Image 1 (cartoon, rainbow, N blue to C red):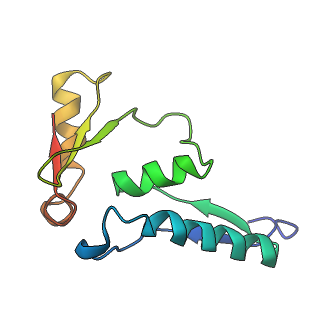
Image 2 (cartoon, rainbow, N blue to C red):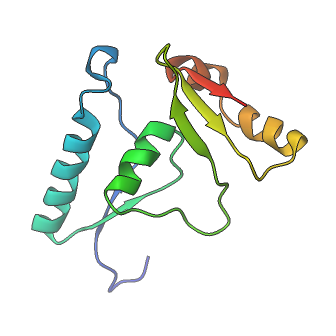
Length: 114
């Protein structure tokens, strides 16, 4: 970066234990991270977020997606799965979008596409 640029704390992801999912722990973790950044005079930033529920939590904290991204609707299924739908993408591009997530990511985050 530039020599006069403010220091930055880059959030790359979060791991939440299965038992703690849905309890609000992600929001609390983000609040602590943002408070620490503010206290230290450090800019809070993210990079590509490959965890849809974390992306939603970041939006609730005021973060916005950068231009050029893909609009994705995220919902939670009754079976604790995470459903991702990119309504603006034609079927072939939607399939390629789903392929961006590894088998491990799809399994650990219980991702479903449609």
